[in-house]
Image 1 (cartoon, rainbow over the protein chains, first blue to last red):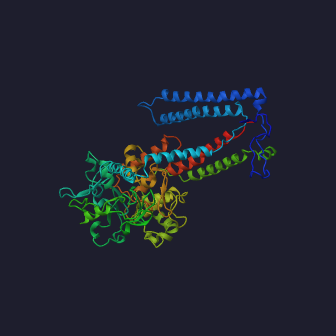
Image 2 (image 1 turned 45 degrees about the vertical axis):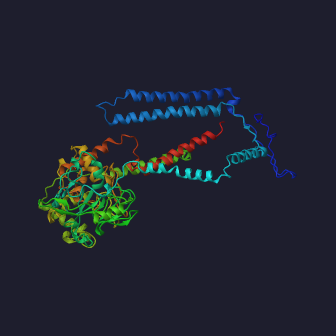
Image 3 (image 1 turned 120 degrees about the vertical axis):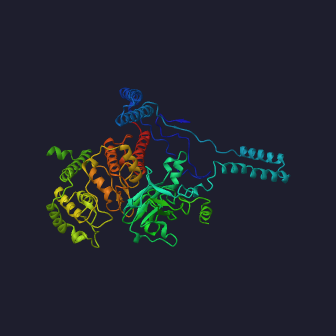
Length: 356
Length: 262
């Protein structure tokens, strides 16, 4: 340890040498001369710095008081409005900021301006003593020798086997965290119930939609009829069953074989759940017939059965087969013919079982 | 003058100049836009309106939309689009189009209220379509909560939950809805301009449209309860702010921490 507050540049104690018998190449320049601060020489400046630190701590006190006053004095009762909430939020934030910054900046300013600032260098200890190292190696050798693990391979091998197998129960336990979804992801509320086809209803009010309501260029956000009456798992069902209903010129649709009757006079319904990671795809452009997913810009072309034309999604959006019932309302003739939403482990298996 | 030239090298001179420039352009823009502000609309058309509108149409619109508005390769037929479509497109300056592009942009309207009225009258006479909405449907006064629910279901995915607008595919975008008049919001819903889907009365009832307008005007006037909304653009704007301002403050503090005091 060398104290250099006297400002002398020499005697730093460390000298760089290239080898034992070689001439010194570099002289350690040592620490630059110590420069005194204003507060070290001028008592007035020291007094001023002291006042500044006290002021910063005082600002912290004021900040804390602002927080407490804002928290207790501003009443967020029944008759408060958004302006009151904004005022309280702003004051809580400003109060906390001043309270914390006042203490922090005060301490730093105190340390920088008033506390002793002489430079100190610490010598580095020798990194490793050869005797210590050899002693440690000896201890390890002794342990290995005394356990006799080299002489008794049976013990060694059984130990290795036991250690390797021990984590397996954890794998089993983590694998069972929460119930398995089984085939819940493969079925939605659109499946006909007791032979009755589900009507398409408006989101959010749940009123059924007539085919005549859907004018060309329209986009309806659709939920299955009866969803709003569910008492349990309503959000889970909605998350799987939401559908976007659009009508375009029938001539611009190009249904593939077997899907000609899935639409009705240019009215088509597609799942709103993106096949990439499940964001709601509902940005419909009625002239280009593109459907855009806002999360990762996957773009689906409605005229090509929602084929992916851009972005990371790998499968087209599932189409909901629809028809019109006796009263003119749109109904789903069946559930989706594939699981909606992003891929999951058993998806292919579920898709095969739906279509078999 | 001498004092001014002496102060031009002042560190704050650049900021002062910038502020002056911004105020000047903002002021000019405000003056320019108020000239075309919409007045109360009436939905009755006289034969004279239709005739004058036909002349205006032939002189300004027929190049793309064809004589008799039957459409050409450059522009769609306007038969049956209704007065509301004309009032929206012409009233917001989107038509006549400035140039071909991903979408027609809002700009100072080229026709005054009377001319817009006459053009609407002419196009409305060609075939039935959505009419210009009644006054009481577009001036708020509906149920803002119900309007908010409708907005979040039908509009928010393109126009942003705070109606700040958002990007669509290939250069198109859904515009921000602040400062759009209730009448134009209603007409846009009823007619589906450009790539916006149509929200006909059988999808969202006139009462529902009124609620949506009420909701939009409500969030416009209340502002953001959580403080600065940074344009309500979500994580991009917020991230930019944190990276630039937040890290900037941290860097400033580290510089101060390691600097010597005098």
